[in-house]
Image (tube, rainbow, N blue to C red; front, top):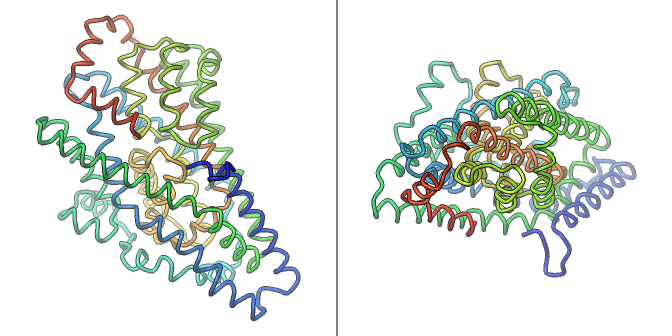
Length: 451
């Protein structure tokens, strides 16, 4: 996915598209102005539709991607009763550390307000450019004026198919969560075959998203041309602020939260830990894919960190899908940034809802480049922020994707290190053989090699 037939990496093509669109748009804005007839025609009939087609392709894959990713991620835990303490510790730590990540992101956005100060007329003009591209999602988006009691009631869908048809993302993810637990509990040849089918849906969804992402350079060029031609330098200042807040929040989580977790909960030196995980961090930053980094992470866990193979294999394999702190943080920052940009005031209750969905979104997001963009779009619909606003951050998403993937992969290794504490003395050959003999253990390995 990362290279074209001519050997030029996709992220370089995206950077070229970003630069061409940005420079061309700024020149048009400065030279002739945004109100010139031919500029309006081009943005309305050429560059606008091209960018919106790309966004629609991403939106199209939301339901199959999130459902299959979450079900497979839960089902691959295997026999929950046999995994026992390790499974519970993994789940609790994933929730706690992901919650910390999202809270850091939300606090940073609320403190620095990177999306404030935009002229409402400019924001509405931007919305008009992409209104048709996300019309179906906007029309089916649910009312996000949620009371706390109604929110918890709506967590459980009365009809999973209706929830999917209405793009009710949170109830659908709850259904997928319980569906995955049911697959684990009802182990049989029939459920094994069903899990393989859902795994197939997951792989097809990722393959199609990879295919659609290849259109990103052209789409980014068109989207950036529209933004720069119509809105000029003011928008660039806001994007720079967004990137600064997002990267700053990720840096705090990486270099403050992770070392504290390693020191306090794992009883290890943070310096020794980061020295041992340098290779998977570099691979994660280069590929922007948690799945691609998984083999290197397993090697580092066993050879550099000296973690029990049983624990490392379980935690890192599940974590590649289910423990994505960087993705959860990015989603929270992006949603609040776009809410500020478009003048949508989110209450504390709504921000808590965003936090919860981001935590679940980290579990249900595929470990591939740009896998979080469909989730961001759906959260925007939930809180009544125009989803077409996602086009604002597409041009800088590749760099942010590389940063958040590095945070994700490092977080998986942090989680494996903490869960391994107290497990090393019991990880003898007998325990390892028992783990390898668990139903579905062999299939887990094959599944992630395939991915």
